[in-house]
View 1 (spheres, rainbow, N blue to C red):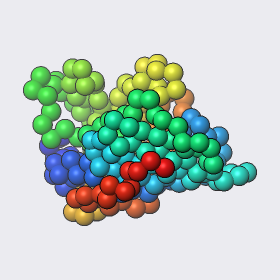
View 2 (view 1 turned 135 degrees about the vertical axis):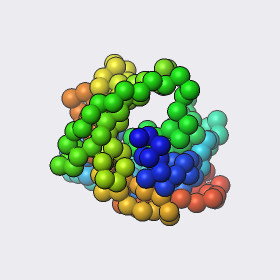
View 3 (view 1 turned 45 degrees about the horizontal axis):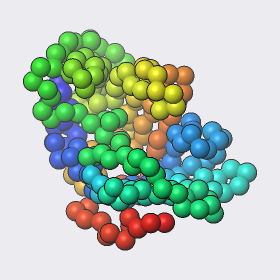
Length: 219
């Protein structure tokens, strides 16, 4: 079932290509702790991972605000509005974009992973088949695949709450898959973490081979 899900996405490369590219998306539900929940937020990101990442947040509410984060190797900076440029003491460093945590599937699951069937369930009105994958330190995941298309449409896991570090249940719903450069991308994602709901709508995404170094200069 998981192998079929990887194939439905467009193969392993549809996942691993999330190391270099550009993306623009809208969010709802206070995805960033620094912002009030009622602001309209649009985010642009450029990434060349591991090691280089840039995020520009444009928030509109009673006032407009632009926040810039840049990571370049072992250095990182942030700038909040017209304020000073501040160093990021411990810059995060990932091999792939964070969105892969939502919809990514292991092309080669751990050899000691255990599986059990969860049966059928309706997700957004469509029939799905569920499977539980227990992958040791990587965690336990309940994965629900669209019966007809084979695409992952729901994912449950236990994660750390970004606000206080508590272990909470996370549900992710994936919808409106679109073909982008030969692979599928869910253009709408909704994540329920504990009592919070976060929505993401991808406006456009492009995968490239290389990003100009100037993109990751100190803001």
